[in-house]
Image 1 (cartoon, helix red, strand yellow):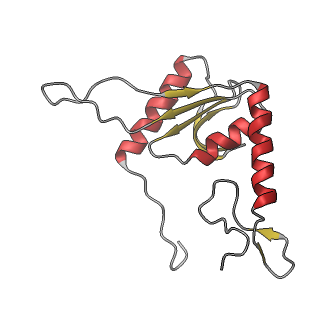
Image 2 (cartoon, rainbow, N blue to C red):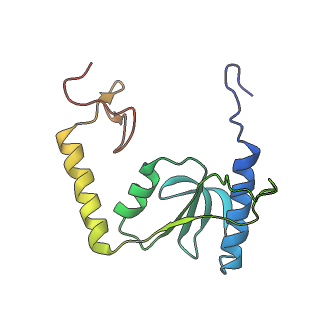
Length: 149
């Protein structure tokens, strides 16, 4: 491992949620579902290309959902938050709670247009010797508004 670079570690809870999402997707006939896959939203916790299904686990920013919606592609997007449910005897509940998002093509167009409008109103700071490398994306915390230092 290069000096100064730390390997990202994920929590046991996050690994368990990803495995649960993987098993759920496979039970829904998404046999090609895999963990940690690059797809249109970047790195997805779990993704099935054949089912066009993305599952994000734990704490996920809204940018991946916005990217999926704005793509205009028919995507199934599931958000599986950390599970804090317990039974009265303090054992962990054996269920998976997920929030599923669906949208119409018209909504995808509206979101994509809103993203373009935001980019026009708040230009992205240019960096690099040829100013071709852009910093920030819609919804990114690194975005700087015009006139900010």
